[in-house]
Image (cartoon, rainbow, N blue to C red; front, side, top):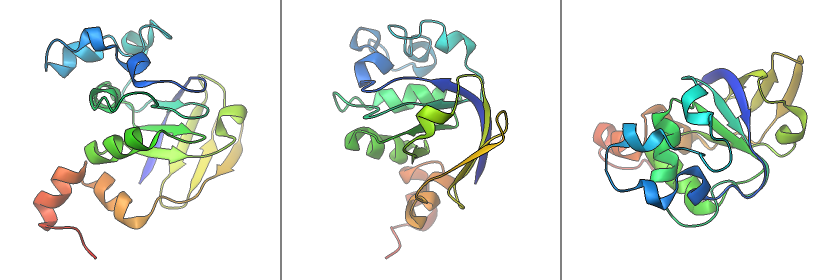
Length: 166
């Protein structure tokens, strides 16, 4: 899987309430809810993000509550991946479950600028910054997780395979 997109940068400790505020969860219409993603910290994000764009953050992205809607609105807006130094574990699991790739790449936040165009090779574990012509290597995502991601999430994976491979 190779992903290519424009970078949106966020800092450390972006919590699930900052991704999507609880006050916005009065409906199950995720098209509507997604319009308010990151409104408290980057108010123009939902209006300006384009399909394929990539989020890069610092430490502990997705901390806070286990709000399942947080990765859903990110995916609904067309973000192809989120890269961070590391993620809150429950956010990581929720994102994989819905097929949103998360990449732990310590140092990417410091070497990539907002607006840069990057290419992420999930299979090889390489981020190519096409704007600055730099490469960042990250620990490859385990094969069973890339299989879940390539199917679009755990439900689609189980529909296709009937069970997890062991």
